[in-house]
Image (cartoon, rainbow, N blue to C red; front, side, top):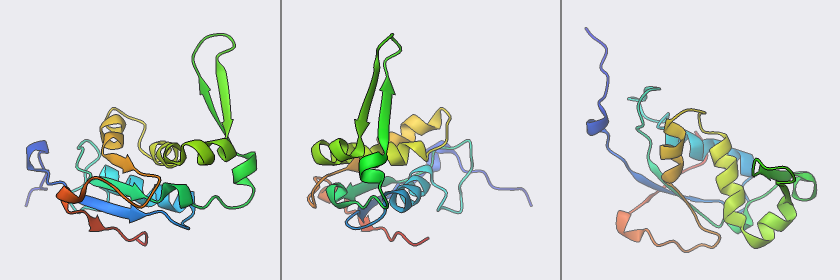
Length: 144
């Protein structure tokens, strides 16, 4: 019997919602990255983009363990001399908590051409409200 390989046109995508309140950022990011890449499905294959959509709510209440809130720094470099910008997670969580979750999840996606498509299916909201009720998202448990 031949091995079945799913085609891109046969992919069915679901919507999931995750509550990030009081969940460690790394544990949240690994589970969300797994669902975005489709590794939770039995039809997963590395060359195919068959992941699902994920909505993360309460990103402002995500937990950073240890001293990460004060010591962890995010760097962005423009490519020009003097173009290195750094932000501590203290500032990031105060102003834009969605970015911290987005950066963590994006860092756990594969480093290939499919990663950008996977990251586009991630929706992060600082509060408990989101505008995707029409998609009827299912609750996603953080335990595998």
